[in-house]
Every structure is written in structure tokens, then in C-alpha cells.
Length: 255
Image: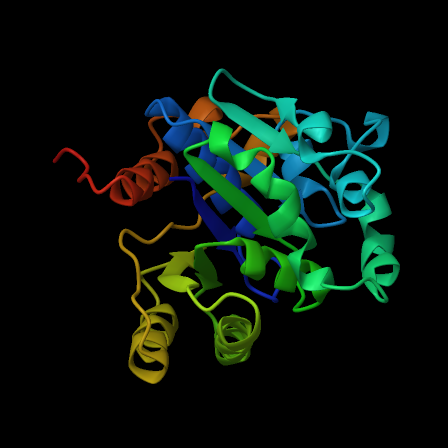
């Protein structure tokens, strides 16, 4: 059965795209068939995987508008990793969907045509709680929340969890919160450790380990159109994402 995981946080700059690209690549390394879906009009995931958004003929925008099926827009990246790319056109998708019946279910319906070919579908959500993110949460089995361990990022977790509660009530009763993934983490600071502890106590959601430590390696990888697992394969960040991929498979990283 395909596992569809939405990676969501309405605050930008918390490593949602890095998480989707890195976990997706790590799962692909382990022999899993993976589709990553770029649901952000900035198309950072698409660019980070080596595609030029401005040169694409078809994207997730065309799928939302019903012009093509999802299979027509999917692009291969590696042997086991494909992407459903985004372009700036996605900025107009929410307006186009405004009067559409059952607009919250469009992505779920589109992915149903291709998901059987994959073990995992990972959705990179836009930094908002609009129709696109609701579509992602409705299409997903699980949701992963990347969290930069600082106050402004922490404040949005409660709002996101409220939205997840609404989605469970209205469109996807079986949606499961995998947990909060600490990103851009600096364990040397008291503030980062305090924010992380408060998330667990206040919201009662799992905090996933290991945290993803802050590193310049993450900023360098998109320039080459590859993930950190390729550009800095032995770095602590790459190894941390590999550990999370193993956990998704119910396995433990080697000591």
C-alpha cells in the first residue's frame, strides 16, 4: 500500500523542501519507488532536483485544472525517484479551484491514477494553510511537520494542528501526524532545546530523532540540482535524513 506523506508547515524557511528531497532520495537509495510532489508555486523542490520550472511544458497546475492526468506531468529524476513538478502558474490554482465542487479532493483523485506505481508519495506543501495545503492533507495518510526550533516557527504549530483537526473532521478522518521533525537545529543553544521541549509538552505530538542540524551543505546542494545525499553523502545532515528514511521503513540505522 502506498504511503502518502504531506510535509507541512505554514511558516516558510523551515526546510520542508529539503526534507522532501532528502527523505525522498534516501528512500529511493533503499530501493523504494518514490514520487515527490511540488505543491509550492515557488517550485523550489522542482529546481532543487535539477529541473528548470520555466522550461516545463506540464506541471501540477495542469493536473489541478484537469488538462492532463498526473502521469503526463511526472518527470523522472533517478531510477527510483520521480517528481510531479511545479511552476509559477500554481499561484493561480487556488483561484481557479474556488468554485469547483469538491475542490479539497482534486489532488487525492489525481494521485489515485499514479500512486499504485510507488511505495511512497511525499508532498512538499506551500507555506500557507490555503486550498493547496488542504488538498495535500486530504490526499495524505500521514503528515510530517518540519520545525525550525525558534519562537516564530513554534507559534504556528498549534494553528497547523487545528487545521489538521478540521481536515480529519471534514475530508480525511484517518490522517495521522507522524510527528515534528526538528530542522535547522543548533543543540548548543538553550533556546532551541527549550522550544523543542515545549512543542512536545504543549501539543502532545512526537518529536522525531535525530534532529537535522543546521549546515551550509543544505544551501549548497540545490545549486547543482541534487540532494545533499549526493553532494555531501557522508555529512551529518545526509546521514540524519537516511536515519529517518529507515525509520519510515520500520528499521534502525546501523550504529
